[in-house]
Amino acid sequence: MYTRQNQKNLTSAQKKRFVAALLELKRNGTYDQFVRTHDRWFVPDRERRLRVGHMSPSFFPWHRRYLLDFEKKLRELDPGLAIPYWDWTADRSPASSLWAEDFMGGTGRASDRQVTTGPFAHAKGNWPITVGITEGRFLTRNLGRPQNPITLPTAAELQWAIDDPVYDTDPWDSTASEGGFRNKLEGWAAPRSERWRNHNKVHQWVGGHMTGGTAPNDPVFWLHHAFVDLVWDRWQKKHPRSGYLPAAPLERYDLQYGRVIALNEPMPPWNVPPSELLGHQGIYRYET
Image (tube, one colour):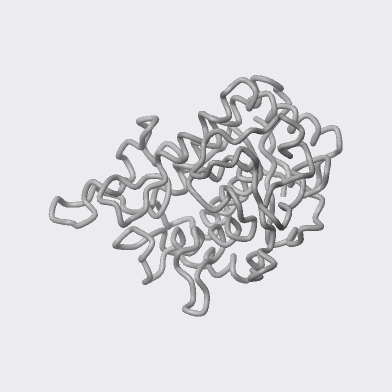
């Protein structure tokens, strides 16, 4: 069993090893395969087809398996590696060590949002963007969105999601407003004064490539989702009698039939059900 650490506790040597593995996965083509997978299964709920990665109950187990697959590739290169996590309720500034020259690099320049610092800067030649919705070949960010400022989620906003004892609710999409931990943490359910919360708000705060289906183009994606995975752990510990919903497949007359994954239904692209990903004991642990 290995340990996922808080990124703020990584040594310079650990950061260097993690970055080196990311660059090698990018160089050998593996990294961009993961970007394509995420983009393929990023299905908005306005589309009348299966939603498995986002805006649906399988958001947590789907991303857990997705991160495990990526982590396996990292560990094949360096068995001492694990995906670090970024606690965005604590490290809330573009001045955080997360964005330092030796790790993720900083924000994009004002003219075109191009990241020009750190190991993933286009000028370094090691991080061409090949999977995306724009023509640009460079990584983009806009930390904090200075022209229309946004803040990272607070501990209180995160707790608001964790405190909900119900995993998810009908209609099992981004409009599920009667409650539900999944939609509150994913961030579509928000008070009327806000557009996003929690997970979604972090994507918007980083900006650039992090705001769409090809978000894994930005390596900080993995650190963000490792924390989301940890938060799912926290919710399970707080509500031990609450389980994944829907537990049973939806009826054929349900408008969400064929669009939502129930507890024991297979999730593409792995053909593995959420029930097999409700815990990670024996695989990895979190250093908290």
